[in-house]
Amino acid sequence: MKVKKLEQVLNQAPAVNLLKKSLATDRLSHAYLFTGPKGVGKETTAYAFIFHLFCQKNPLSPCEVCLACKKIAKGVHPDVLTVSPEKKEIKIDQIREVIHFLKYPPLEARYKVVLIKDTERMNQESANALLKSLEEPPSYGIFILLTENFTQLLPTVVSRSQVVRFHSLPKSTVYKVLREWYGLEKEVSQTLAEISQGSLGRALNIAEKGFLEELNSFVKAGSSRSPYLRFRVAERFAGYNYQDLEEIFYLILVWVWRSYLKRLIDYPYPEAFPEEIYPKDPFQAFTLIQESHQALDRYLNPELVFYRLFLKIFD
Image (cartoon, rainbow, N blue to C red; front, side, top):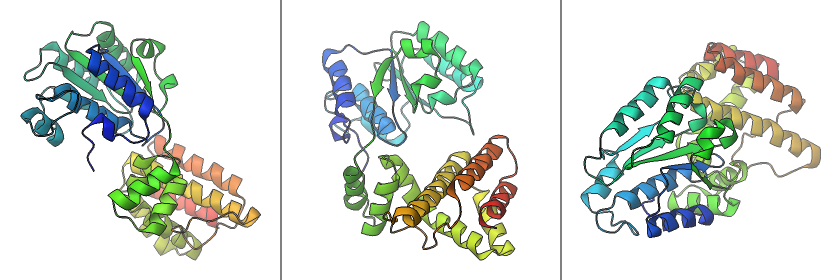
């Protein structure tokens, strides 16, 4: 379901009410900083807010059928610019594109909106360049900055933005959306709601990309001690991008921890997780998984990183 109205955003009433009030009073900030855990609705809310800002018929309740709404839905509106990290960071050239974009008035709308995802991934140079734009914004410019942790941003960037806080979603909400909106199986929905830490985005990403199946492949290959199976899995993992590998590492960590709880106090084990339970010391495994993650940060060969992980935690 593509959310196009703020009232459709789930379980984020304080954030939604703040934005609705800005729209109703026509007192908009030149910069909004959406901060909160990953996958709880920051990006969804940002796009809904843009629909409200651009709708040609009713900004308080987007019509979804006017030309502006259709262009936003297709991601082709000329007055909206979206910036995402290239690999692991937002670079200075991307912020220079933002500066150029804001140099000229809107082509079709009242505003020009710049949506920056994972704002905390700006390097020092790009952060300083963005700050200049925030200090001297054009009257028609609106920034929407998304971050999981605003403390990683320059204090001056935070101080020049309207902070909008988001919180984790209840497990029941995640489960309901997975079952009723996306039609996932009950067992899978329960597992994803349990392990996603209130992040619907994380749960959907894991489901859509088959990461539970990849976790199962990792565990089976490791438990088999077969070099052939391990190389096949490591080779496949090497084809994922950095963000996807973060999710895979997260699932491996959860599997190790939930295995430990199962062995220690017979804590309920996620139904859609691998049948195999990790039998060794979890804390040593946590260290090895973290080392592997850091190795990818240093651009080491992903295949070798994962094969080494197999050897260290299973053998």
